[in-house]
Amino acid sequence: MTLTVNTKPLESRQLAMTIEVAEERIDQEMRKAARKIAGQVRIPGFRKGRVPFHILLQFVGREAIIGEFVDDLGQEVYKEAIEQEGLEPYFVGSLDDVDMEETVRFHLTVPLSPEVKLGEYRSLRVEEEEVEADEEAVQQRIQSILEQNSDYVEVDRPSQYGDLMTIDVRGVVLDAAGNETDTVVFDEEDWDVTPDEENPMEPAGLDVALQGLSAGEEKSFELAWPEDSPSMYAGSTVRFGVKVHKIQSYEAPPEMTDEIAQNVGPDFETAADLLESIRVTVTEEAQQRAANEFTQKVLEGLVGMSEIEYPPVAVELEIDRLVRNFDMQVRQMGLQGMEQFLEMTNQTIEEYRESLRERAEVSLRSELALGEFAQSESLEVSDEEFEEHIGNVAGPLPEGADEETVQAHADMLEMMRGENSRPMLDSDILKGKSIAMLLSIARGEEVPQAAAVEAADDEAADDEAAEADGSDSDEQPPESVDAEEDASEAEGEEEAADS
Image (cartoon, rainbow, N blue to C red; front, side, top):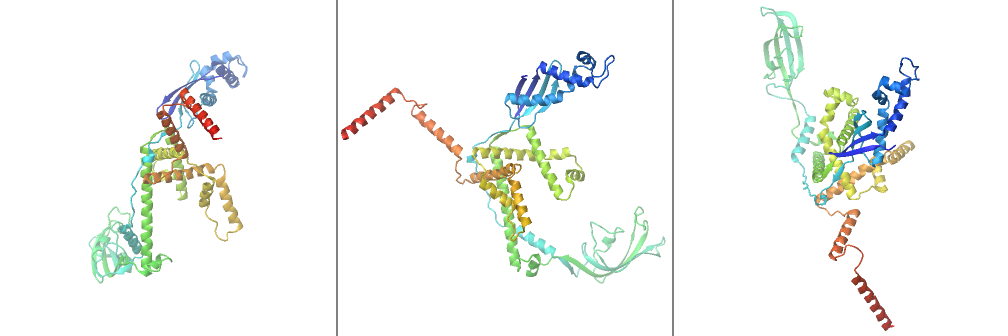
């Protein structure tokens, strides 16, 4: 039974679809559903399962009967309508409404495949910045290594926060008259203490009282615990006596030495070796950052000059992908997936998804533009390129690998060749080839035209030549045919004369 399908284009690559189901089919479905309902309801005067259709219809109502099968019918007729209309949806359509008043009509929104119209990308040019060693970054790395090799050094100056002080300290609780009692709070000799402004000791003021003291100096002072302190000495005043023996400061070595370089790793014999390695590493990192920024600018340029339309569900699918990737990342970090991360960050999954929306839009547009670029340039992945790629992913076999390792390596390669893995890997390779070619174009390098582009250009050139000759087809006017015949006859006469 043919469906009556009406479609109407919507913005953002969507299609409004109304599917009207023939009354005959609805009647058949209703009678099947009625037999099922009849075995479940009790109607006075009738046995279960023996209720005539028209009686059941009056008793439960038309919509209740249709409700028994409308979901399954909706899925069936959606597939049929898609096939009937010759559509290839980008994703499953969404059901907006079901009208059951006269007949049954399904109202859906069908997402269509994204549409990309690339701009004149062959004219895309992006300036690439030259990268040099950042001496400031190099010095920061050196300073970090020096700080890792820091140690306490005795100093001849008054104490400061962060110093390691070696002191004798005695604290005794005072009575109401200010006399010392038998309650001793502190009684330490050669006590190593580091006053910390951000994490003060109790009672409040003790760290402050230890500031500005020099080695050999003695000091007496009184401090009180607040009344609301959880300490057992809450509300008590204590007289402290302090004698300073030594003050040490945590200081980094003044300069890099061969000894420190050797402590960093076995590859460094001298400070110069380490310095050169740091300079190379900093430069390579800067070059990688610059390369990433250049690639991003080129992709932005491609997207910016192109017309890209896609259905809203495409963004949701991209957000799904980002969430799955992040879930794997947090599991690798030791967390129990997204749920624990969301709990730790005090946000819902809806809030987190919304925070990804802008990033997903940018990623989606880049992917769509690159996909169209690959098609425009007729880029493909050869078997040789695929084998090279999976060989790089699997890595080389270690020297002297045992049979088990060799088999595991072979199994990994075979798994990547499988029908479930190859399409994804092909997509990664194709993306890499597309980006590499696009970067060459953006640098102004000579990039061969794709075969399809050359063929189109040749055809256009032929058309222009034909128009210039005043001909739009392969047929020749009668005068031209006659001229060719005359020429042929003349050539025959010349040949006969020569013979």
